Image (tube, rainbow over all chains, first blue to last red; front, top):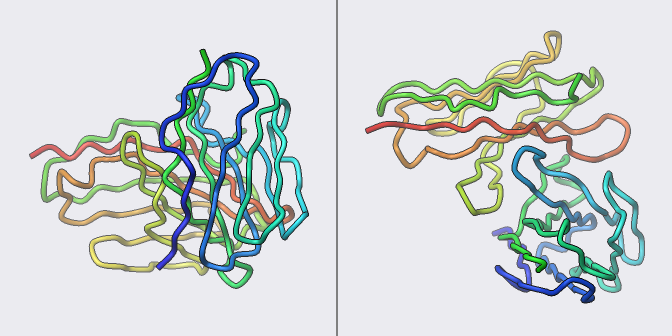
Length: 113
Length: 111
């Protein structure tokens, strides 16, 4: 069974803090993705990784960075959190054999005050 | 023109009826199409994948694909109140390897 986990369901941080969001998948998937979802704006891709130590910018990478040191783990980093980064953050993974099927983790609702 | 378009709804159907959700896309080279269900406050869950023209059935769900018309739909038969959710259409980009998501259609099934 497909399993993607995220480190926190809810997170509250202060403006200017450095924030780490962790995602782990146990399906040996090559590709991993970070999205944010906001009302009226839908799902927007922040960063993705095709393989270990590889990363590509998505549609809205500004203010974010990522790290993928191991195949199963993909981290999203907010270098200096701002209130406009308050959002639902969703991690997804995909295996090369699965024809684009992406499986999502439970999400992290981040509030920046 | 948005790359993947869905009517935001809400689409309201009575319990036991057929719910029909529609999606159009702009990338003629797309080969993979997906429907995700998302309950309020939860993450999207993959419920259907379709890659060839025609119908694909899985339980009460049927996905329909017409590549010539660039149209994909999801039918839910015998709708239940538990089907009330937002349904996201997603299309595989032919040149980037990414999924392009629609804004979603909210379905309400009334008892």
